[in-house]
Image 1 (cartoon, rainbow, N blue to C red):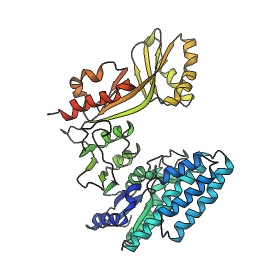
Image 2 (cartoon, helix red, strand yellow):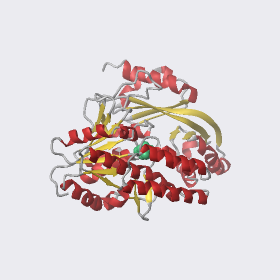
Image 3 (cartoon, rainbow, N blue to C red):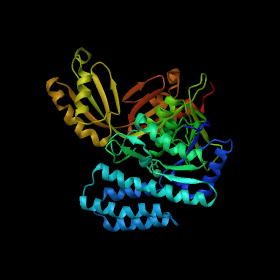
Image 4 (cartoon, protein in one colour):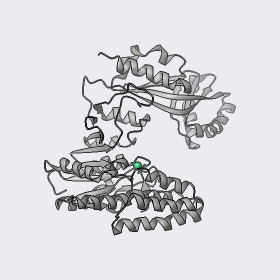
Length: 439
Ligand code: ASP
Ligand code: MG
């Protein structure tokens, strides 16, 4: 980019859009030191859920009409371009109704309308209060993704030139681009969403493409806590996380961040900040690891199912783990977690994948005389933090007793426990690794 000062990227979640004056104040304060500001926004709160429901129920025509009314209410005084997107939803929903079963690309096209309408609406509100906002739709800008509709990944090499060129033009003029989060344009030239919650990922991706000074994820109510406060009343905010810790947290089910958000920032050394609009003291900075820092956070993934595969001769059978993985992969089954000992392989799946997993494993039970038992209802309770293995001696027996499996890396230690034990276990872990910690 031609500008010398690297921009700051501010991402506003759907709930924060309710207060455009507040967003204007955030943009002004981020730009106070002369930094150009790029805003990335989600659809207004609840809109993506409504759009997803419309696609999931192609024949609910009355509900589709109601959806259009609701979107109009949520975006009063919508400028012409925004209104055009709202009007386009009519024919798009008609296509959904006709298809009976919309394909993934049509689904993504419908889902993307929430963010499109939002950027036009918000830019108009910001302009009224003196912010030179310009609505930008990421697919038209040239944010290129792969063709995995519904869960696509940003293709950085292809996106870099168009994104930098397109945004530099505006930043050079002192304007504030207000860019859609959540989606880009696939290699086939269609709209591709990045998965639910994907605006965080879009923001960190844009930050990486622009060489941003920092990326701030501004949320209305949420913060990064040491556990989900609904599960653990003593959960507390975490002021700093390493990229690696944040990535494990996101992957192990802390819903506050989209799982792909961290990688682009890590790869480019860009500081990520997660902030709560409601409480300015709650900020989590995600940056390179620092020696001597000790963060501990807990997550619970559930509901899950565990299958135990007993293989006679176990480890003496070369390739047995590979064969199991291969058969599951061929059946499109994703293994959430895998525990092995000599003759026992424990596999953890999402509940709706168990049948396919059993089918995929059936030939092994015949050829290798293996035996499968389960499925057992389990939850995965994970403790995350750099150097977590130093805490092995602090694990309370209440957490470990009756566990179905255990796995650990220097950064994440996870237990498969019977589902009804998930809450007592996460609380016991939290007590000994966070609340009672002195060193
Ligand atoms: N609007 C999308 C969703 O609700 C993307 C996002 O909010 O990050 O999933
Ligand atoms: Mg949203």
